[in-house]
Amino acid sequence: MRPFHFPVGLCLLLLPAIAQQSVTIRVDTARSLGPSKPIWSYFGYDEPNYTYTAHGRKLISELAALRTPVYIRAHNLLTTGDGTPALKWGSTNAYTEDAAGRPVYRWDIVDRILDTYLNVHARPFVEIGFMPRALSTKPEPYQHRWPQTKIAAGWAYPPKDYQKWAELIYQWVRHETELHGAAEVSRWYWEVWNEPDIEYWQGTPEEYDRLYDFAVDAVKRAAPHARVGGPATTGPASAKAAAFLRQFLEHCATGRNFATGATGAPLDFITYHAKGRPNVAAAHVQMGLAKNLDDVEQGMRIVTSFPKFHDLPIILSESDPEGCAACSARTYPQNAYRNGPLYPCYTAAAMNNIFQLADGYHANIEGMLTWAFEFEDQPYFEGFRTLASNGIDKPVLNVFRMAARMGGDRVAVESSAGLSVEQILQSGVRQSADVNAMATRSARGVSVMAWNYHDDDVAGPEAAVRLTVTGLPAAAKRVQLRHYRIDRDHSNAYTAWQAMGSPQNPTPEQYRRLEAAGKLQMLGPPQSLAAGGGQVEVSFALPRQAVSLLQIGW
Image 1 (cartoon, one colour):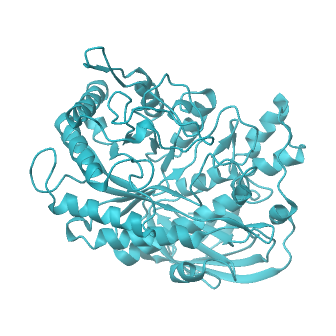
Image 2: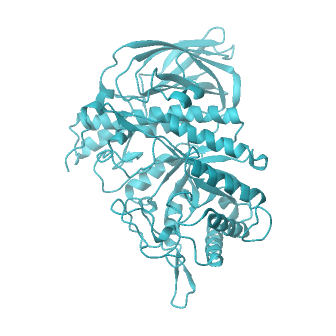
Image 3: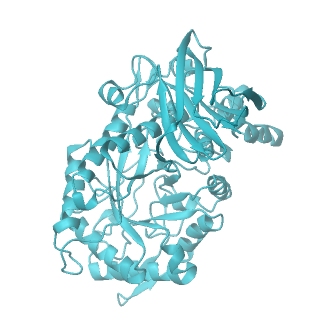
């Protein structure tokens, strides 16, 4: 297949910086903002059968190596089929019925998926879905043929028998507790369905509430301490999605439970999704961070309006620059951000602003799940929303490697060129860039993640950053600096692949070089710096659409 070349306007990011902007960033390690939660450590994808391919196992191992509990979510864990994957499709054949209509349970493919996570100490974020063919109220046609057909098919319909649905969930959870132990299963998340406010659910909101009640009751009967939640709706900036989320919370708070007849339903965590909206403007990609954050904010507004649920963990069980991982940039040029450093830069800015929104609403943000994995048998760097391409790590994976190196407490940061979350919500990042940072302090050091982000993927001023870190221990007369970077020339296998001539069949030596280029790289060797009066200063250049991690240790 011919190499994938973006239009000229979409490659302007690769041009040298055209000017320089002086920026001061001040980190006050004495001002704690509370513990730093690893909200970034959640990942997911549509096609569960890719999990145990060679490239899938490799990527799962790399995610698990991020040193904090990593949770992985996949669609189609109950979908009927022989396990053959396709775009936006997967199956496990977990439930069928014999000729007499008696349930037949089969867990081998489900076990193969979940064991791939558990064997490297990642944890399942179990999405309970979709509807097995034998239970669907409209079983045919059952499998979609996306993108040739709409995604909704027989797997998206309510069950014809809610008691059989509940028994399926009970048997599944009981199987997992017998296999892994109740203590392990209690560490997982069990989320009921996906995006029931759109085509993924061909029932009514009330029918979803019924589905939820029978599912959560079954989970709790099999594993009383398991964590169950939902409703995994789309972005609440949509009035329809907001109404669905609100009615679900009302049902869980005061509604009649369809499974038990009691008032309300158990709810251990709340999920909804948040997506940006990129487009092509004047022949270049223009991201939509404001839309992503609007979804986050509107969901937090709804959740925190329920006193009963105000303190429950919120997990954005999909939070991404847009909504279709399987839509390649070849067909959808607005997705051309996915291969280069713009994707990790966007992710860093989004993460920081999600924290800011949670602070403002006193919301218990627990996770922002990145819906990206890998696709088998696709051209190199085809422009899918993935973390790796044919086993080669993409730049976005390195922003999570940076985040994994940050720990302790979040501390206060001020930037002369940073935009507030209110400014981004109102106008996006369409005028001046957001040159900003977030920072953490642990017992032996400070970590600062800084970025130079703009919605428009065009050449822009390089930031001349002067970073001042205060509140260091008085005894720390000298500190060691390690500076990691994601940009055009660092932690970027995509530009290394382009420099090779964009080979679709790289030689073994080229492949090794691409693997190395895809890892997180330092910007020069470690440095020893003088620290006087409890502070240290560092100056560095930060290109447009680049991310730096500076780790200062004593």
